[in-house]
Length: 543
Image (tube, rainbow, N blue to C red; front, top):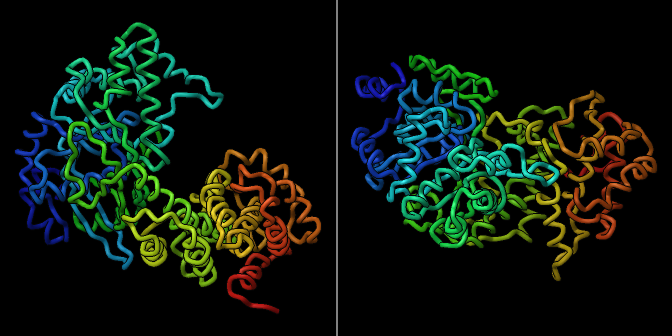
């Protein structure tokens, strides 16, 4: 068997006997519909798109709710299209990794076109212009990562690629964003047609990031004489182009060798994963957890697709923001960071394995249920406690999720203010809660400072995960060694505890600094001190 449209037609029984759910819609009819009246084009043809949005689209096609398919566009790594999509007729396999250690296998066929965002590819770029000139197009969505929307360099100046595009104009723009907004300009020239530009990336207020980039290009091209004033009004003020906020949540790791072996056992040839020249891991299959959430602000000038019938939630902007804050500040991200910090210190290499550790499991439960839920932002459309229940009992313990504490520990200095600092602020401002009742969040802060010593609980050195503040933090922690006395431990970290850009609050001002120093001294007392501290404060053991 092969992952090709001819094969799934001719070998349908063999696929089904091997446990695969196959597309149930008329591909040729959906392809014809999509070619003549495209409704949804998606930029960023990576794993989460194939696992989530494409899966929802297929469900709606199978049920007859939609009759046009997805157009997948890749603008960063063209090899994803050339080596994974097209050799398999735009089909892919979704391996849903369930918490009971079973795998649900689905052939995804909703991506009926795949295109490369490359000016050098005349055929594909011409087709993209046709798509954006068509009145039927309702939505252009994006999963291009947060950095994909950046128009400025770290110093605040325009990045060279963006500056070059503004000087070159829409007909010559060659950056990813430049080509996207050149296509939007085509839509403007063809009647200022309405469209929703929907970022589905996992970053806060993602629609604003896309809108900011659109403003940069529209104003830059007008200033340089390439477009008329109407383009700025169309992009920013007309109500004909929207930039909805969204919140997405689905763990989609890179292709897993265990899944590749499992699929190979089904006698489907040609499913080998590859690493592209741009270091992208890609395969004809994608493995992902079963849980998924996508909440989108209901702002679609050309009409919205019926994605709500496939589990995606449409709501207002305020509610999108609340869902994001619920997840990031309380129900998921703080638990992940807790496991990342202590997992590195205790020698774990899988997040799922940490949930078999009674102390770590209890620690994340205390942070989520006991300290987080009393001040959680409740969005109304998703129950926060049910969300944590799913995270603690289904998602994080999933043995098929090959996520590591080392990966989650990346950029922790940037995560602490939101993931924990917002909870502390909520306690400080509350008239019914005492900030000094917090015992476990300060323990995570102390654990992270202990992590910065890059020595695990058995005295073995380990490599710190990348973090933009390491150059500043490591000199400050250079004197810290296991076995130092409590006074020395407190003196070393004392200046850091005032840094609200790291902890979200000045820990001295809210008088949590003493507790963090106490924990840190105990965590650094010598080999085995991390485990002993967890024994004492999480398990409640005393000498």
